[in-house]
Amino acid sequence: GCLEAQSDSVLLAAGAVAAGLAACPDAGTAVLDGSAGPALVEELASHGLSVVEAEDPLTATADLLFVGSKVGVIDHVAADRLQARVVVPTGPLPITTRAVAHCRRNGVLALPDFVTTVGPLVGGVDAVRDTVSSIIGDVAGHADGPILGACERAEAFLAGWLADLPFGRPMAA
Image 1 (cartoon, helix red, strand yellow):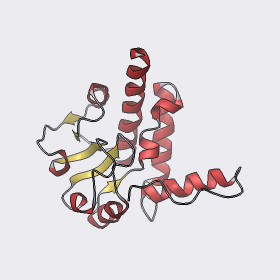
Image 2 (cartoon, rainbow, N blue to C red):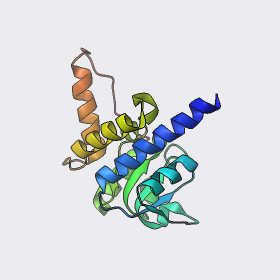
Image 3 (cartoon, rainbow, N blue to C red):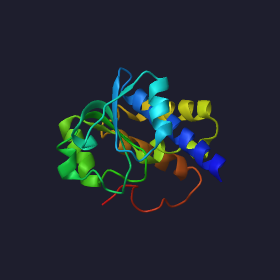
């Protein structure tokens, strides 16, 4: 019930903020699309990050953009308007495949949602922070970007116990 939902939101927030800080350790500001709730605001504050209030979070200037209100909310057009240094998903598939390419071209680091939102599946807050920080730290500098780096890492893991990998990668069309 309510305790589980609150716990999940706290774990999601812990993972998302850990991901953002692993990708951008000097971050001081964040803008939110409102999809992650008050737990995200509390987690940001606990790490000394200021939340930028914006009518349109996608065009606000900030170090970190937390977004997850709907699948594909950041398409290639939106990606070209981003003023954030790092996009941190708080929900499934908010960045389209084409937007990932536009982010790379524009110097915006787009993080993998299947890592940033894993918090509720990992366990306690400290374990979430450690796990997510470690993975993002490993893939943030990948030559093809952190999303493809995380995909390759996941595929290597799956190849250890599956003969055939599932087709495709976890990205919005």
